[in-house]
Length: 292
Image 1 (spheres, rainbow, N blue to C red):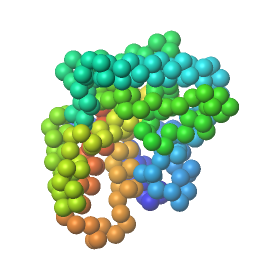
Image 2 (cartoon, rainbow, N blue to C red):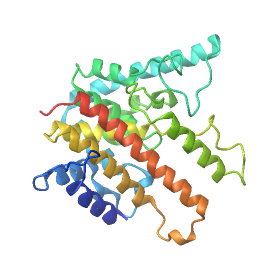
Image 3 (tube, one colour):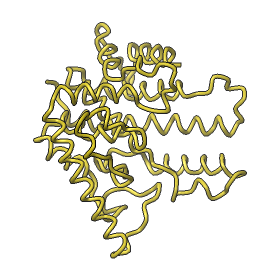
C-alpha cells in the first residue's frame, strides 16, 4: 500500500488544480522529494500507515538530534502545557467546567478553560517567535495522540518527558480557524452512530468520539516545513489535501468487496474528515510560515 500511496501523491501533486480553475506549475520534482524527505514512507516497511506516523517520527528525530537547543525548548514547552492541563483538571473539579466532547473547542464559544490558539501562542513563546520552530515543538507530541515516541526523538533526556493528554488535542487550540466545520462534525457523528448502532447505540456519541485534532497539527507541520524550504503556501494547501487522500487510500482494505454499504459510507466520511483537517492545518501554516 505504501507504493500506491507514493504514486498517488506524486501524480496528484504534479497535476493539482486550484479550486478556482487555475493550475499550479510545479517545476521539476523537488516538491515531491522534499515531501518524501519529511514523510519518510520507506520507514514503514510492512506496517500499515494508519497505525503510526513512523516517517514523521524519524524525521523529527533527525531534526531534534541536529539541534540540541530544540530539546531544551521542547521540555520547557511541554512542562508549561502540563501545568495548564493540571489547572484545567483543578477547575473542572472545583468550578464545574463541562466535560469535553466531540464538539468542544478552545475559545469563548466552547470549552471555557482554554482560549483559541493557546497551543500556538505557547509554542511561539518557547520558539522565540519562529513559526517553523514552533511547529516542530507542537509536532513532537501533536502528530498523533497515541503513538508519539518522544523517547526515540529526544534520546537521553526522555526519562523526564511525557506527552500531554486530551486538552492538547482540543480543536482550535492551534487557531480559531484551524478546525473543520460544525456541519462536517454533525455528518461524521451521524455516520459513526449509524455504523455502530447494531453493536452499541450509545458507543459513538459526542462524549466519546475523538476529534482527531492531531491531523490538523500534522498537516500544519508538514506544510510549514515545505514553505520553509521555499515552496509556495498555495501549493502546500493543495498538497495537504492530496496527502490526506493518499493516506486514506493507503488505509482502505485491499478487498473492498467485503465491505458493507455502511462501512463504505464510514470510510467515505473518514476520507472527507481527514482531508478537511489537513487542509485546515495547512491553511494556518500558509499564513504564518515563511521561506528561509
